[in-house]
Length: 146
Image 1 (cartoon, rainbow, N blue to C red):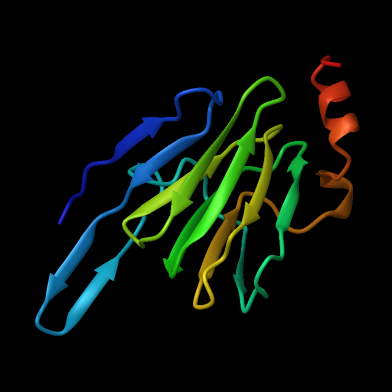
Image 2 (cartoon, one colour; image 1 turned 60 degrees about the vertical axis):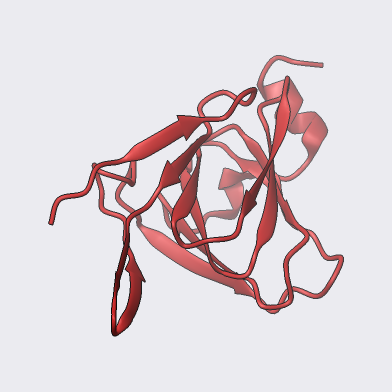
């Protein structure tokens, strides 16, 4: 079965896209998937899963210099705030039927995790602490913004 990608750019944050993912349902249950080229704009080199986030806690709050990420909330819901230095937008992920592509040099913050939320993050590179921009002021400066 070949799927087609439905990808929607966000209204105000450049290069960030919400990608609709296929859901296959039969009497045995449901399955969602993503394939490089059809849904994923990069071949993942790493994945991690964020879960059991206490109420009111914030994750992320950083940007990456060159790493791309693709986020899927496989259970529950989470709010993702993306910011390109000029504009910011909130995206609610609450289904395995959608993934959020975040390119390099976009500040991303995850918040408002439901108690049952499980967030899958696919990354284009292996973990490297030097890859992270953790100060918002530095992020804006790197973009040539004040």
